[in-house]
Amino acid sequence: MMIKKGCQYLVVLREVNLSFKIINECISCDACASDCPTGAISVADPIYIINPEICCECVGYEEASICVLVCPVDSIILDENYIDTKESLLKKFENSKK
Image (cartoon, rainbow, N blue to C red):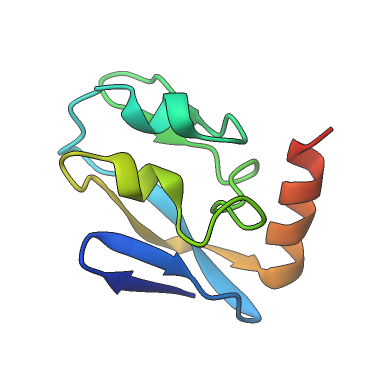
């Protein structure tokens, strides 16, 4: 679960967590992609996308999701269509360090 605090989502690990997605307000500034520790954010047409299979929501890296913190237009939101478990986020974190 993520808690929105201002424009930040603080990571609160529960049994079920929602992933993130980038919406049309994205200005393709590259701030999120260049700061993503797992490389889960990539260029697409016309906006960037987050690969939920790679994204660990910065669990293990930071207390908040870095992409959300650096996005200047708040175009990264929770994706209710993609659910992660606490275990899957931790596994993605471990895989990202390989």
